[in-house]
Image 1: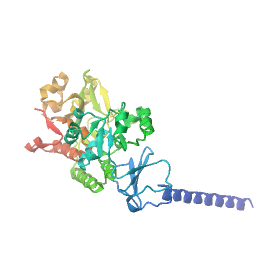
Image 2: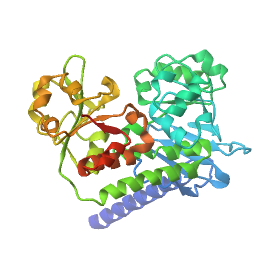
Image 3: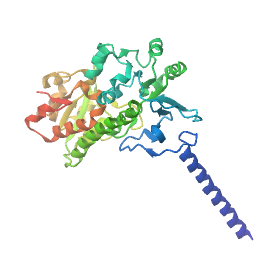
Image 4: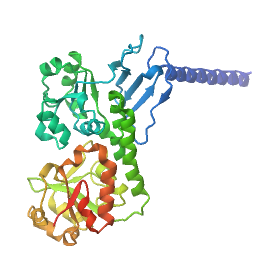
Length: 381
């Protein structure tokens, strides 16, 4: 009798779990929009993990960001569907008059020939190394509307801004996001900096392709970058070690944290970052400050040096580098002539990460004259 009761109870529990699972699956199937519409397909993503896109009938697209925000893109000349979930922000395609604060996204719009979707910038013209962006600001096609922490609300509203694209820095000042939304400006926080794979950041071009109606161009550009990565992956690993850093005004070495996207590009190119476990993997910061003596103890044996000029400015000679600290004269890479400097545009070129990996690969393997033709680095003499 007891055994029968136990079996019956177990069966009831199993049935309950099964029905609950069906209910959850039903909600997932229906519940993109909450109005009974069924998604017809999903966007194919290769590396990006922080957004996805569901496509519905007649060209409607639901974008979901990893922070939980959702945006329904409504095709031109179509009406927004009724009875959708209240958390979904409706945007009509093509999305224009964008206030772009996330600097990493500018090159994505540029590569799709969609700068005309942007009317306001969170960076002044002199801060752009993307030539077309700088020209658009100098001509007045894109206007400076204040940085992320101090936007010009009056200008943004008067410009009929349809969307603010912010970087994750906005999370430190939530009152700005709240104010923009209070004024009727939807806010999308670009999460590409959280992508684990470098080309995951590049793949965000597909999201902005949905906004601008240029998905084909976005996919074409992304596929071109994956080809560079695939070509590098086909080659043997070099096991050459690379130090990536700059010297601060206080004389400390500012090195990339192990496992960040720059060090992963070095690995994907067939090299090894000189530091195995530098920095806290749980920390959001991408760099680690080291006293020069501590930096010297490990980095002096690196086969190659890549000097990060983004903060400190471009260098023109090895002598200029060693003038920052005489200890650098003892570095293996300095003595062997394997010292490189980044071009300033490197960190505003999210669209070109595949090509950057190809550049690093060529640096590690090619001693020929064509090394003078690298796109994002140059050798110091």
